[in-house]
Amino acid sequence: MDNRVPPRAAGPGPRRRDRHGRGMRGPIAPPQVPLAASRADVFADLVQDSVERLERRWPQLADIDFLVLEVPRLQDRHGDSWDDEAVPLGGVIPAREGRRARVVVYRRPVEIRTKGRDERAALVHEVVVEQVAELLGLTPETVDPRYGED
Image (cartoon, rainbow, N blue to C red; front, side, top):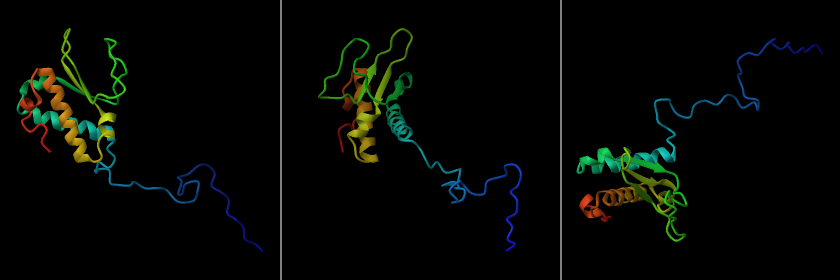
């Protein structure tokens, strides 16, 4: 039998298949489609939507920084700690020493308490309203008249 295998090309060329022989994998979606937004990005968008909604009524919120952190620290800078019963969903850092005031929303505690996007968006808005109310020294109902409504 004279079945000769042709010699291999000298040098690496473009791979036509992956090492398992299944072929090259292509893109899942076209590049212009925002396919994979991370959960952190989606959560930050929810916070931003809530802030924009409140800024229409309270223009002074433009002078406040809104942050999203994963989880709260066990102890703050003053040595105060939150108890094991209630994990905070947000916090306020007042303005001082040339720094702007900050409102913080903690992503993981909010995500754990909600099941879907709509429920998460409602809870994020409640947290933002409560923290802004605390920072401004107002009641949450004054900051957003629809506060507490389902």
